[in-house]
Length: 115
Length: 114
Image 1 (cartoon, chains in turn brown, red):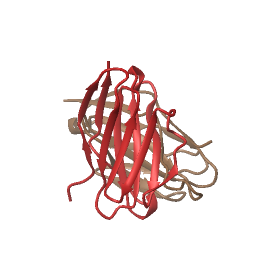
Image 2: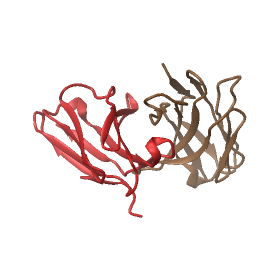
Image 3: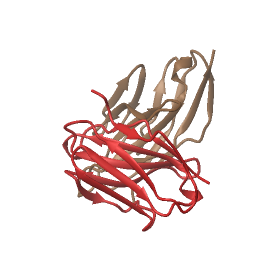
Image 4: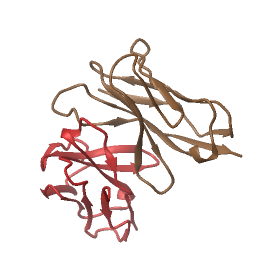
């Protein structure tokens, strides 16, 4: 079945460091891919998305590129801030079928950024 | 817009009691999702509705769990009887256009069953 695997955390960085959080997926066909972020005590919020191969999603300095050949959607940011401390979830949604609205999430990666 | 509204935000109950969690989706959204989040199992989809009809309930753990959506602006998730292993944060999310677009999450209900 469809699944999403994220790099294990937690990830601890100093402010202004470069961030990469790896995400790979298994799926039938070509799913849409997402990164969601969860701040402490809150629900998840969409950070960025890509709906087809080679698409790059970007938002708030974060980027991720849909790589069909490696079935990956790694999240990157060139210079993290303390305010980026949160839990990051990679997710996929099927391209079609009766459950096309269904998201499958990775296990989440905790990011802590120190001043 | 008020966003997705969930109530209560926190619930503490004793094993064996009935628990009802409530959700009001964003107006105009026709898809609604119930998720459960735990440290051990991460974020799991329990059930989702399109136009008030359950589309996929394969994630509902067992018969103790039931969900309803009597109209477009309200849904409930009921656990009866509750057990300590049901302790988790339960999220409701809604989405327009059958879930094709972004899902908007509520703040969650933290359930503790003692």
